[in-house]
Length: 176
Figure 1: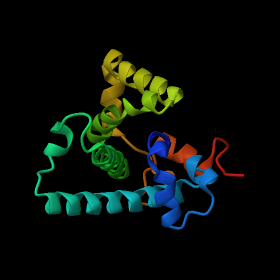
Figure 2: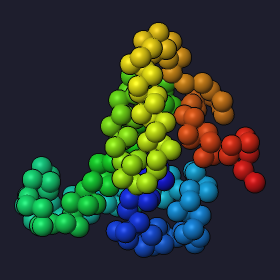
Figure 3: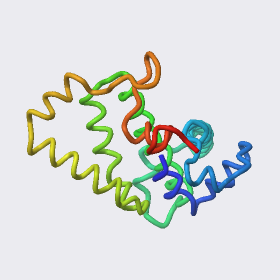
Figure 4: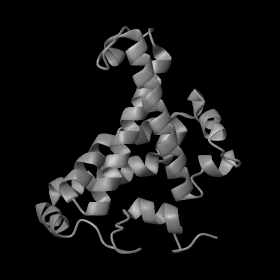
C-alpha cells in the first residue's frame, strides 16, 4: 500500500487525499494508520474509476485505447488508469488473503511485486523475490501453504497478511 502512495506522490495523490479530509499528510504518506490509509486510497480508487468512466463516455473511446495511444498522449489519464489497475490488484490480493486462497494470494503478490523497486521499497522487493524463489526451490513449502494460506490472528473472518499485520500492529504487536 505504501508503494502506491510513494509512486503517486508526484501525481497529486496528496491533493486528492486532502480533498477527502486527510489532515496529517505525513502520517498518510508513512501509512501510520493502516486502515485509514487503506480507506482513503479506496476512496481515491473509486473517484478515479468514476472519472475515467466519465471521460471514456464523453470522449467515446474504449478503455483499451488508454494504454495503446502514443506515449506522449493522454499522460494524466494513463497515469491514473495505472493507479486504478494497480490498486485493484492490491485490493484483490487483500481479498484473497481474507478468504485464505493461497493460489490467488501468490499470483496477486507476483503481479504487484514489480512496483516495489519502482517505489524504492527495496526491502519489500527483496523479501517478495526471496519468497517466490523459495516456493520454486521448496515445493513442499508451497504444498503446506496451500493447506494453510492464512492464519486468523485478529478476529473471526479476518486473515491479515504478514505485512498487513505489521503495518496495523507494529513490529512489537502494538502501535505506540
